[in-house]
Image 1 (spheres, one colour):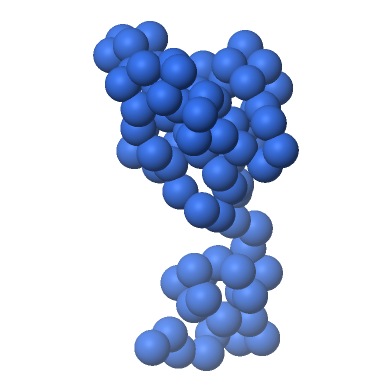
Image 2: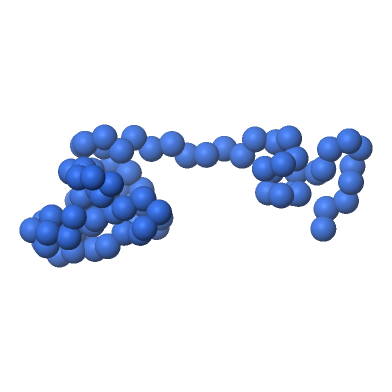
Length: 86
């Protein structure tokens, strides 16, 4: 546990959330044609947005993914399979 130092907890307490230090957060642009990262899957291009789901394409592997925020990501081999899952 972190010890009390002066009037403010040290940087290690609460991961920087409540100790007065700002934690940097990555921002991504999820508009059509932009490249995003979802977890450990990198370099996904946003092809389509329908409702709360995004159709993503990885150029290096030619695989398609459907991502729903806070629900996860699913891989599909063809674009038709991914679009049916949306």
